[in-house]
Structure formats: C-alpha cells, structure tokens
Amino acid sequence: MTEETWGQVREGLIRQVGRNNYLTWIEPLRFRDLTEGVARFAVPTGFHGDWVSRNFAEAIRRELDAAGVQVARVEFAVLKDMPKAEPAAKEAAPAARKAPAAAAAAPSSVATPAVVSSDEAVLASAPLDARFTFDSFVVGKPNQLAHAAARRVAEGGPVTFNPLFLYGGVGLGKTHLMHAIAHEITARNPEARILYLSAEQFMYRFVQALRDKQIMSFKELFRSVDVLMVDDVQFIAGKDSTQEEFFHTFNALVDQNRQIVISADRAPGEIKGLEERIASRLQCGLIVDLHPTDYELRLGILQQKADFYRGQYEGLKIAPGVLEFLAHRISTNVRVLEGALTRLFAFASLVGREISMELAQDCLADILRASDRKVTIEEIQRKVAEHYNIRLADMIGPKRLRTVARPRQVAMYLAKQLTPRSLPEIGRRFGGRDHTTIMHGVRKIEELMSTDSQLADDLQMLRRLLEG
Image (cartoon, rainbow, N blue to C red; front, side, top):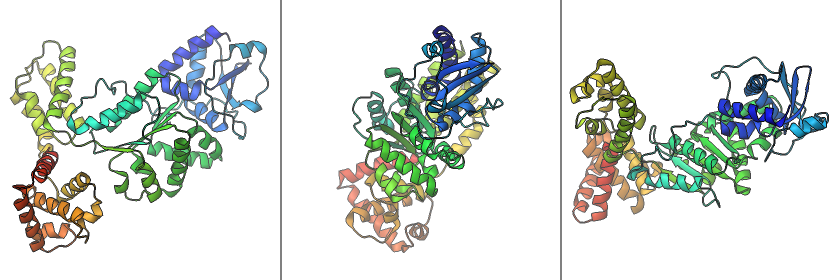
C-alpha cells in the first residue's frame, strides 16, 4: 500500500468519522502488512485497539476497498506484539503523531466485527455539531461571561483556568459552547487530541474497561489527550467507582497542564451525590453560570434564525411583531424557541401564507400554552442563592448570619410577589418557618428597597431572570 493510497483512505475516513475522531483514534494506527486479504495495524494499547475495532474497523475496510486495496478484514494488535513490518510497508505507514505510549496489555488481535448501527455503538468521541460554532452563538448579557471564557480556552496558549465549568438549565447554550471550543481548537491546531463525551459515555467506557480487564489502557488513553471535555457531569453523581476514576483522571490531566472543560445543569456544590473532593476540585477553576435568556437575547437568536430561514424559503415574508411576540412568550428554553420558529417557517411554506401573528398563534398553540408557566418557590430559592453565592441548604436552614438572612428575606419577598402561595405555605418551604416570619421578611425588603439602590437593582434583575 503506497503513501498515495493511504492518503486517499485518510481523506475518506475523515469525511466518515470526523477530524476529531480520526486524530484521536485512527491517526495513531500504524500499518504493518497486508496478507491474504487481512490488513494488520499496530495500536498503542489493547484498549485503543478494541475501540477502533468496534467502532471504525468496518469504515477502514470500506475505504481500503474504495482505494483499490482488496481487504476481507482488519486486525489490530499492540505494537510490541506485532511482527516487524517489511521495509515497503514501513515506508507506507501513516504518520502517528502524538500516539500514546504502548501499555503492558495483552494483544488485541480482533477480527472485524459485523457492522454495528450507530445507535448500538458508543462512539469513540461524541460527534460535534457543525452548526455549533462561535459565529452562530448569539451573545447577550446572560451568557456574555460564558462566551468570553469559552473563547479564551479555545484560543489555546497557557491554561489560565482549569477546569472551565459551565452550568445552567436546559437549552441555554452549554453544549453549543463546548462544541464551539472543540471546533476552534481543531481549526487552530489540527493535531490537538480532543476527547469530547458525555459523563454517561465516560462511565460506560470505564465499566467496559473493568469488564475487559483493560483498566490500565483506559487510564492511559484518557490521560493522553490534550483537551478533555465532559458534558452533563451530574450524571456520575452517586456512582462511586466512576467518580473515583474521574477524580484521578481529572487530577492527572491538571498535573500535566491539560485543559479540561466540563458542563452540568447546576453548580458543583449543588450536585447531590457528587463527592466533596470532586466538587472541591471542580471549583478550583472558573465556574460560569449561563443565566436564563432575557428578552433581548431571545429576540437576537430569533432574528439570526429568521435571516437563515429567509434564505432557505425564498419569498416567504414574516409580519412585523411576530418575532417580538415569540421572544416574549417563549422564555424558558432556547431549543424550544428555535424549534417553534422552524415549525412556523415550514408550515407557512407548505400552506403558502405569510407568517402573521394569527398564523403564529394557530401553528404554535401547544408550545405557547406550555410556555405559560408559573414561577415556583424552589426556583426562586435557587436563583437567589446563586445570585448571593450562598448554599441552598443555608437558604432554608436555621442560620441567622446577615450574609444568609438578607438573601433569605429577598427570596421570601419574591415568593410573595411572584407566586400565588399563601404566607403559611411559603413558610413551610423555608424550613417550616412561621407565617409571621415570612411577613416580617417581606416588610423588611419593602422598607429597604427605597433606600438601598443595590438591593433594588438585585430585585429587578432577579425578577427579570425568574419571569424570563
């Protein structure tokens, strides 16, 4: 197999599996020989070979066939266990830049498995969405800091904060920013070894490595990357063995000055079941909250999306005020907001009508009904605790320190203003307090609002966050 042939195979594989997967899993392979229809490759570790065999062997075989190399199956074995290659084969071997050192693992000479459907196989690295780039990310006050921090990490250079921890509710842009970071790092440094996966996939691979007695190979693989990105880390809470391995992987990468980016649905200290030592280490970096979108940000997202759809649905008009109406009514989730606009443009195109206010209300009736939600006391407590940087447990606990008591009174006031709950019921949600305590807290905040401008600003911002 010549260098030109492998170049053709390489391009086909990059198209099939993506550049990140190629660089992480296929680039380290070394072609050894081709005998009786069997293409043999050396791999750095047995665990690496198992993963390539399960997920990419069939793709490699198909691309070799397409390049005119007749291959019945593909085999992988650890480098030290492979027979020496013939000089010609060695010369034609693909480059293996930055391949991790071989581990003391048993050889993994595995025949090509049957083709596995994408929903049956766990991908080596979760696929990146080409749409999720920094250019397509709409920046507003609620996500300005998160965007700036993600940009800094993606620019490379010295690691300034490690890990970068992004947290927030569903549909606020955490995954978008993580994909954007990976895209930007790859564009700036195509050889960077980036591993992006969900916490669930991390657990799955760890359990599989234990079952296959490949735990040393697993450790070496995860600790050889330049950038580790773990989405939805709250998934490992309560899973002791997985947390133990995650903790050691985290420490090893930080010690090597490798970048770590993590996302979750809440701050590290608020993830129930997460070991204290892990929460403590996660808090050593930069923790950034993606706040719920405000009206201006939602409108900006809709305008960008509408501009895109105008190019797709030529001649389709949208009446004044429709985007503003949607930005006001659909406030809880950006994905729902974008999905509503997608549905609206598709429906208007099918029926051949202008996107008017009436059409929007008819087409999106179910989404609009679901968006008419009520603010809950629990949501108020969480937002106030986050704003004043206190523990949620202290918010409803017995502590009377001023740093806790004042935020607690703010939460009581907002619960009275934004929910239909009675004072006794609010009291029960604040650790079983008497309704007279709630009344006192509400009155205290009402008195301070006229003299304390900072408190007035805090209340205005919190109301805006809670009401969307």
